[in-house]
Length: 199
Image 1 (tube, one colour):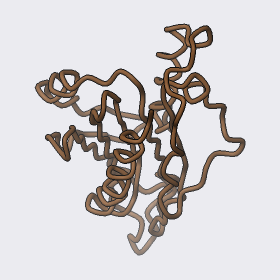
Image 2: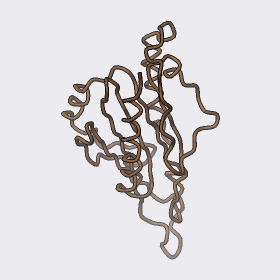
Image 3: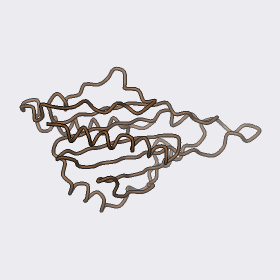
Image 4: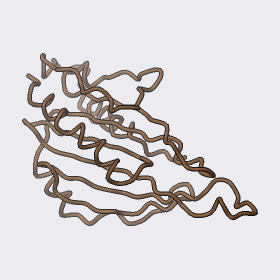
């Protein structure tokens, strides 16, 4: 339905690492704790893609998907996706600069309206909300039961801990803003703990 997924967060890390020729560099970190497990209900992709940033000792990431439990007449968003990572070289001024920027304007993505829903400082970093309005994928029947829209929520958090850039990206989650927020909240502390233990 859309090319932007949580996997894009991890792909961006790979691009940065390749751009710095990490294949030819000595490992930056030797002691890298495992990433936190996926939130309840999320499953890793099959097959799980390679992890070049961990092999290079410069970062780590994890990703997964979860089937959304949608109401009658709705076929999208079929899945929520999540990606979270840490990468060497995080700088707080990057977060501060992003906070000063206006939110991205509404945009049409594959026929659905995605719009800004808030951006603020949060838990030592920055959190950004986006809301997509999905309309029914089945025509309205004689009783008018298939009209209206539902909301899919995307929540993105970034922070800097111990010189590392941390990122969590939850996309197209159906279940309400508060529930989507709780998924991200459940990972922030765990990801911070991992970043603090990397040596």
